[in-house]
Amino acid sequence: MRYIQRQSMYARSLHWIHTIACLSLYVTGLILFIPSLAAAVGVTTVQGARIIHRVMAAIFIIAPVASVFIQPKGFVHVLKGWFFKWDDKDKEFMAKFAKYLFFGGKEHMPDQKYMKSGQAVADIPVVLLSIAIALSGIVLVWPDFFGGGSIVRWSLLIHDGVMVLLGVMMIAHIYIGAGIFQPYRGSGRIMFGDGKVSEADALYHWGTWAREVLKAGGKDVTTE
Amino acid sequence: MAETAIMYDSSKCTACKGCQVACKQWNQLPSPLTSDEYTFTSSFQAPLDLASNTWLIINFSEEDKEVGIDWNFMRNSCFHCTEAACEQACPVGAISHKDNGAVVIDQEKCIGCRYCVASCPFSVPRWSEKDNKTYKCWQCFDRTSAERSPACVSTCPTGALQFGDRADMLAAGRDRVAALKEAGFDKAELYGEEELGGLHTIVVAQRGLEAHGLIRDPKIGITDFWQILKPLGGIAAAATVGGLGFSYFMARNYKRDVMVLDDATDKLVKVEEVEK
Image (cartoon, rainbow over all chains, first blue to last red; front, side):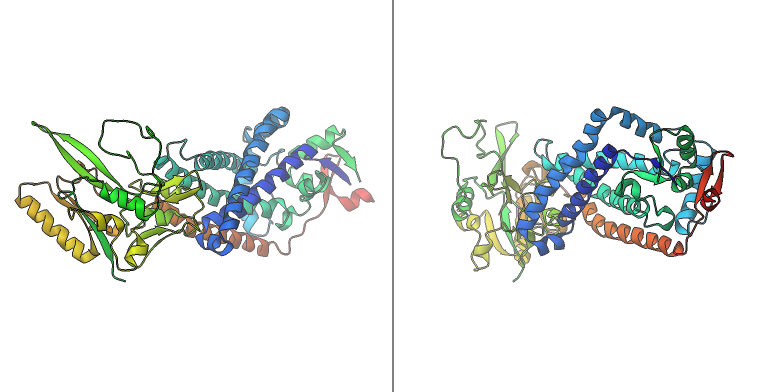
């Protein structure tokens, strides 16, 4: 069967760096979010968690921002994926997705481009929420610089609220992306493996894109 | 232990600052030892603000009159609120109420996050860069638990500061406000009876709350939402996991044919057919 290179080594590395940062931020952040958890682990662990939280927060911010400059073409590619002209297939995908997700994946989904319309709809809020959690976190690290008081209170509210929203989206992302959701089995190789996806899976998930790549051939299509 | 409170009567206060000194002395809080460490402002108020090593100051508020000025003094320190925003904001449970109502910071647990500093409507807790901890008045709990008055109260020469059962302090405060009104101070008010669930520092404001720099009807504000977010976050996570668990269950028998592209016809065909 033919395989298509869907994600480059760079994209996968960035994904895993960010994954480690995100998971570390959640674990260390929850210690500060839940007082009983902080009490259970003790002050030294809490202080350690705060330091790790800040180091990981720096990675969380720097890694994607640096990528815009290191891989500008990749950034443009992602932007094009988000801001596309919606056609009937994209609308049909969105209309069917909830039923597809919750009722056994039996729904026949329309062909999709490189980025599914549903993924674009989820990704844009994730980016905006990530910016919000990063900015509010910066205020919390240097509260005196930002004048303290109400800006800190709002920042903490935003930081915690966005954490909840991003947490929910991250759980859903892991469920779908890692192939725990049965119709997505096989797609795990894209990030867990060498970035390739089988022709069959590519055609099932991103029909329009897969046909384009398979027809074009080239180094992105290999046979195993 | 019964609920106790400090009562500060601004009409009896001469701003001698004995309470400030006693606070520093008892709690072993260092003062600047070099000259000119405080910026000169021409005010008699010194220090100008609370700090991690200054838990009590007397504020000097001057009000211009036709002839001369009125000096409206105010004891600036922790009010030990029943609904304490600092306690609610503390992510590690370092701030708690003692049985008598005093709100204290456990320095062993404090991580210096400064959420209490941001949340206090009176701007009382102060963070120390030196040891990354936050400090404030603890109503001399070591003294009060041994049935002694807080240091500031014990040193007050005019009786402007009193300490005792909160109910007694409130009763005394009400009487004092009535007496002040009779004496012509129409704006005299009692502060701390209902504010933030009841304060454990009661103030007799001789010339009204605003004249003494007191916040009328203080609110905890958005700190309340921080508390809502915690159970809400748990519910959201549980609902997501539950929903996705349902999705997983519904798709447990999912199967699909492995379809590949037939380049010749540009149609999808079963992989078995291509392999033949």
